[in-house]
Image (cartoon, rainbow, N blue to C red; front, side):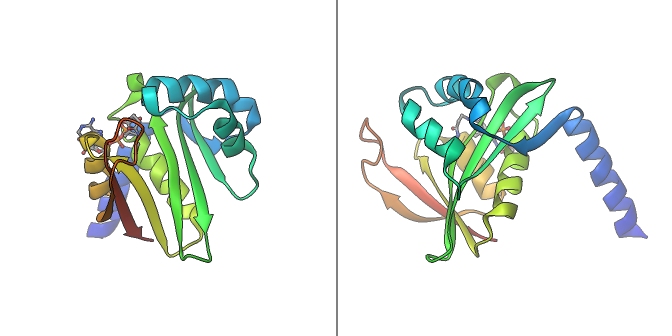
Length: 163
Ligand SMILES: CC(C)(COP(=O)(O)OP(=O)(O)OC[C@H]1O[C@@H](n2cnc3c(N)ncnc32)[C@H](O)[C@@H]1OP(=O)(O)O)[C@@H](O)C(=O)NCCC(=O)NCCS
């Protein structure tokens, strides 16, 4: 009885949080919206056009968009590597006007659920404490440090989560 009540409250919470937000598969038709989101979210780390086309077309890639009122407000891509036993969360971003509403977490969950591998991995700038907090909250742990991984010489934190 207690857990049923908890489930009801959790569902209510999700409904309130995500009212009007949908997570849908993305396609090449989302190129312009993704380009804008990437630029705004990643600045110097934004992917070049070729990588954006690749992430929207390569057959094995999982690509999901968060939509609200016909507008892309978030995006996540996953790269499953079944032979290695893990998959990479290749990119995740939420439009700055819609952050801290649980959309990043929802996108991450949706992508993890589709990876089809035992573990999920990602890299994040050491200074990106907001994202690191989100990943830690979601069960990721630091497994490595890649020195000077980013263009400006900043280190990448490599994190992993069992799925
Ligand atoms: C990282 C990002 C995707 C998070 O998206 P989001 O929709 O705001 O995330 P959520 O609302 O699901 O956050 C869940 C929790 O993570 C933590 N968190 C997320 N962003 C945070 C921030 N900027 N500062 C501190 N904690 C943060 C909080 O604990 C938050 O819960 P709370 O809001 O109840 O405190 C978003 O900030 C973003 O697009 N950043 C720019 C791109 C980027 O850095 N991507 C990650 C690259 S590895």
